[in-house]
Image 1 (cartoon, helix red, strand yellow):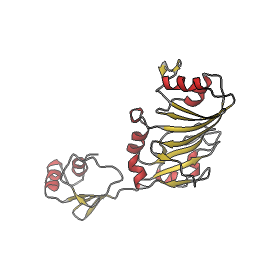
Image 2 (cartoon, rainbow, N blue to C red):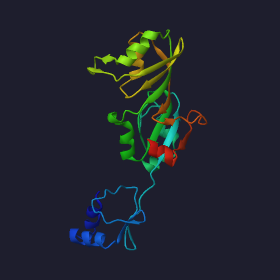
Image 3 (cartoon, rainbow, N blue to C red):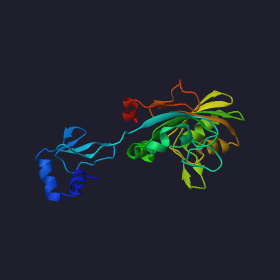
Image 4 (spheres, rainbow, N blue to C red):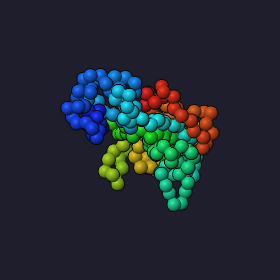
Length: 230
């Protein structure tokens, strides 16, 4: 909500009062005097009028989780445990997922209660590189590199994937870099070659790399620098 609207919605105020209060420097946001009534106020910010607290603000939380296999990326599920079950803070602070991983896929998953931040991370226009370690049943050959770099047509959605980078590590393993997150995209891309993915692990999202100290199922808060970089 805009700051001037927040002030005007007070029981004893109106728009004229709000403008006067702002102009007089009587309004503080997170401890700083603000005179711009067009400022967007988020639920995480503290707003004061003189000595009166109008909005206490709530903590903005950001976590990285080492997702184990067998957990679904959802808020609830009738057959499998969800990744939110791994975080005691989830229910109290209304955490949600900034991106998803399949049931059997492991690796880096981001959770937050900040909807603006999660939308910036996941929106297609951000094109955050996502790096995966992949193991397959059949041999991965050099023609995969060319096909992935050119983009692959998915008939069901009638679209062509963005160019992806593939680094072959061994005959049956590779490191794949995607710039989007289509439904079962990695498995479908390898499926184009009738090659089944037997292990899939996300190593990083953008500049954020999964903390090597986190065992499957463990999580930690992001640092201020990590939050800003994403």
